[in-house]
Amino acid sequence: MHFLRLLPVVAIASGQSFTSLPGALFGSNETWGYSPDSIWPLSDVGTPLEPQKPDAEVQDLISQISVSNVNHTITTLANFGTRHTLSIQNSSTRGIGAARNWILSEMQGYAEASDGRMEVFYNTYIQGVGTRISFPVNLTNVVARINGSSDSNRAYVVTGHYDSRRIDIMDYTNDAPGADDDASGVAVVLEMARICATKQPKATMIFAAVAGEEQNLYGSNHLAQTLKNASINVQGNWNNDIVGTGSFTPFSPINNYTIRLFGASYAYPTSSITSAQLSSLSDIGGENDSPARNLGRFIAEVAAGAAEYLNMQVALIYRPDRYLRGGDHESFLSAGFPAVRFTEAVEDFKHQHQDPRVANGTQYGDLLEYVDMEYTARVAAVNLATMWSAANAPGMPTNVTISTLVGFPASSESTPADIVSNESQFTWNVGNDPLVAGYELVWRPAGNLQWTHSLSVGNVGIVTVDLPKDDVQVGIRAVGANGKKSPAVFPVPAGTLG
Image (cartoon, rainbow, N blue to C red; front, top):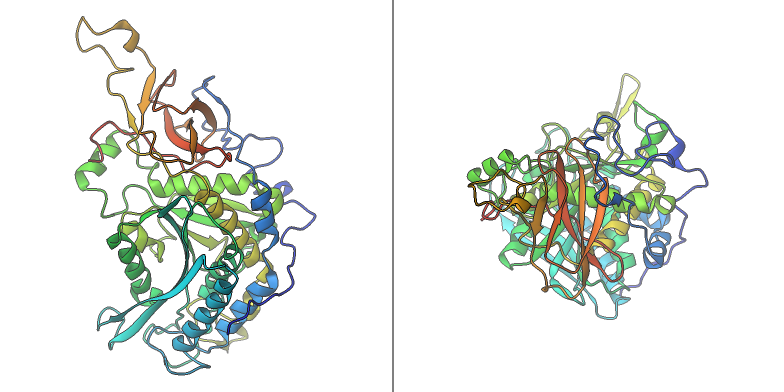
């Protein structure tokens, strides 16, 4: 029998707010998304956007994050010695098999408290000889799933990888504790699963500890393809990889309250965008409004609204990942799903992919002593607040288009005068989501990172506004009766995306 571990809940927010520190992305004197270099054009369409605030339920979820549980997960995984994908699988104390079995047991314990809502299972296959795989190996993702009460086919997935590595990627026998990379990410996944086990989201939530990341993203690719083949409507992947500390050098105090979030542009190759479609998107300046980047904007905005409870800020980075590097979210991107990656503010490469050792007085290795459990708990809270908000909001609007007639030069003398203007008209599908109470248009000057303005347009599928399409970026998002909002969708001319 599995028992739910009840450990002390440790507050993740301190009395001092990070917003007063140098480098804070927002504060009491600026509106959300403010950028002094990108405030033109001026417009009175809508009002300055205020990040959606957490309701009492989200506040309660955040308060349940336990630093002790995070510590327990990271410590236990690091103590398995190595979790290399090719390491031993028939030991209860060492290797990836021991880690896999322990994660399964933890998730099964959470499921016992779920009143049948949570199912736990292996997503597994035999990986043959291939890139960084020298012999066939059983490769297993450990997954917990809570089906949505309103839309079980719409899903949100949080991932962290439980395999580890040394400098020699093929060394599967010697120690590779992988405390930060990526026991920290698995701790986020498990803590979210533990808290959500007793809840009932409107859409499906999936919590996955994946294997094979260091070898070639094998596990996450298998999971993403499994979901795609089952026609699951994955509207977001929250991938956590190296989220263990904010205090590496070069250090500034704000780093300890900052988590980076990497979002790919439309230029990232996926199964859902052809080269011709990418060319069309580039023609209209849509490269920075991909589903991944709009998911990133959603996460950053929700986190900003909950800042007093999270004591954390999200720094959205316009890259698919760190420079010339990659992670499991790319498996979801390749499958055509919106996906982003969380990574700590500054990485320390002395404690990443290193053999544990002391050389010339310097300690190397991805060791427990270099993980800040409170920081990781704050990252877990950011993930929990934002993914729960998405799973309890309506789904993203579909077939969002911009008119190619309204707001263009006349095509003939008979062109009506009322459409020869600088207005913009947008349309989208309505009526398919019972959670929808209405829709909202959001916009920002083209040079801005975040949405700066919003306009409630009601429960309709068309709106015409006095916004110059040449100079701003626009999105349409759904709003629920509970006030929760979906990520925005960038409108394109009809036929652009098929």
